[in-house]
Length: 315
Image (tube, rainbow, N blue to C red; front, side, top):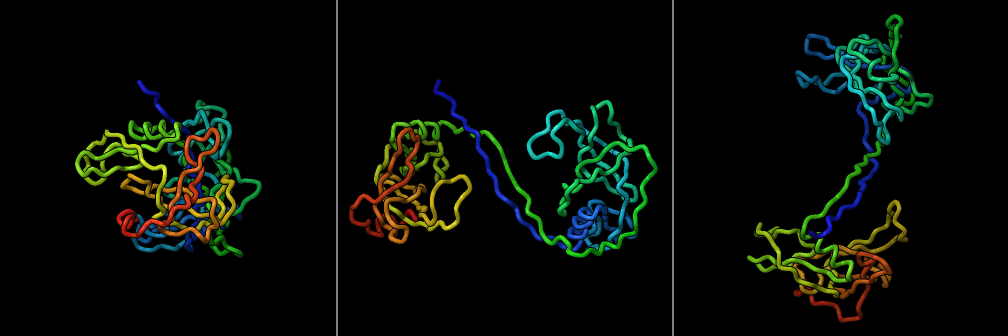
């Protein structure tokens, strides 16, 4: 049985969003150690925390801000015995839904407790504020057990100086990728400095990298076809923003390259030529580095440019 390939992959990017008046007031309030909810306008006057901009029942816009207390009651919980990177606490803790005093809905956050036996539905808790606050949900460091009297809101109106108008939240996904039969064969061939695709038994097109099935006909593919190594630049872009952890000086060119014998263009970096001299139809070949499992980049072959009619269907 062939080796099952797998590799850890990380997708990470900063997510930037602007805030409306309700979310702006809520996050600015956290910065100032004030918790704000919003009162619904459906006649029941329920106080929603965290606040929303539209009534969950009527869908009407709501902006009637109401301060609630930093103390509350646990409505349900689950124990987290192995905290992960980026979670509120580095030691085991409980995820809790807390209905703050004065609110009609519950807020999800972490509860710092010595163990699951110390947590129960109905227990009283209070907010532990972060030492440094910037206007984010992390301004609430966590909740902690509390046996005192309910705290009283100060009656804050929700008006602040220098309100928070936007946030940047890091988004990250860690996962293990395992390619199927077709891509495993493609990767193994790359280790031998060969580029292999698969031919569709119906339309006879050769796809690189192979997918195991023809994207046009929807039938399985199994016939392997070696393509390249030369190819033609079909289209390209000039990259001017340096990527994190990528040791390539900008500007550089990333291109779609139709390898000889392939019916689908793959992408690769173009090197060995000034970025402003890369063009459609440029003939290129792969450049391998010692110990690499894939081409480092593609460089010009010195051949005359390909005629447009040869690659126009691969744009």
